[in-house]
Amino acid sequence: MLPRPGSSLLSGSARKSGISLALNGSSANGNVSFHDRLSARSRVTNLGILILLSFASLSALFNLRYMLFGTISKSNPPPPGYSSWATFHGYTPDSLSKSVPPPRNGTESLNHLVLVVGHAIWAGCDVKGRENDENWILEEYQKGGSVKSFYKHIEKGVQIASKDPEALLVFSGGQTRNQSLQTEAESYFSLAVSSGLELPIIQGSLHEGDLQTSLGDSKAKTQVGELAHANAAVATAHGLQDVRMTTENFALDSFENLLFSIARFREYTGFYPERITVVGYAFKKARFEELHAKAIRWPTRTYIAGGQRAFSYVGIDDEGEDNSLAYQGERLKGYSLFEKDMYGCHGKLKDKRIERNPTRRFHPYFSSAPELADLLNWCPPKDSGLQGVYPMNLPWDLRVTGSGWGRGAQALRAKQSKGKKLPDIRWLTFGRERN
Image (cartoon, rainbow, N blue to C red; front, side, top):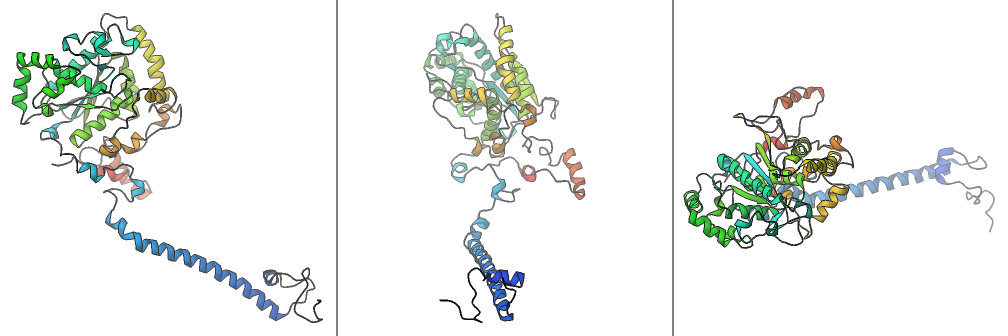
């Protein structure tokens, strides 16, 4: 049916949309009435109203969400120093913090981490055979003399900690072998106890006198050694909980030995150490001082109050051996790999960690040392080397330790009016846990 002449309806090809009429002001034949233009503009207005209604609906939804969930966020605010939960990457759940006792009395004076790096697992039945390969779980390259050095590392660590009442001795090493569920650290601890060494004791502890007497008596030493079957000697010493020694049971390489032992110190005492002494192979000294310490930005040339170095390394190599091959191998297969991949999270170093974790262990330090969460999770691009060093604040930064703002931070604070950002203030409120 054709439209009547003079009708306001137009054919499909001749009729334009209302929006076009409003914008162009004309139709195909150039004759558009005033009434049609008003009608076209009303369509544009309707579209605008539709858009406004959509925004209003979204706003209402957001307001409703805030009304429903806003009180939850207010009742559960982020920890002090954090503007929101999105900026907080480490947290100790209440279910965990409420299930552990406070740090032991006497640990508040500890400030020195003595780290003995694990290399193998002692699995002997008699401590007299501690220098025999058959009493250890070893790699092939470790056979033929290395176990003597392992015990010397243990002995040296005990000696250092015994002479310093502010030291906590940490044996570090995970469950790295298929043949044993024992960790390297636990086996070292057991061997230290059952060997009759003069163990460091927490000052002022209830068992200080009793433990020294029981372990100091020669007869008691012999009995403990004779009872050492599959490292059962650990359970036989009275008052062992007051020995200033503990284990770090999750490290899978030398970098984790250092970082995880710092986290274990925090877990054990409630705060971080002020200085560190590492006991291990001399040929690995450069790896620790030049790479691992730099990766976590621990100062290696700084002295703390009292004239003590913030970082020391005690190296003990195999005696009577040509160690030149060990130094060459370290340079090619150890130092050079960590030099490019300082956090061990790529390629061969990552594969080693996987291989050394046959029972799928996960460390707990995201929860027990939450201030290190971002560092524990840091993995810069492959081959980034020093360019990929963790850039954010750490609990042992000079601007954080002591009374609060360090000199560098104070200078930066003075420039705040010039648009300079202040350091992350979350660490400035961090302190020692109180009983």
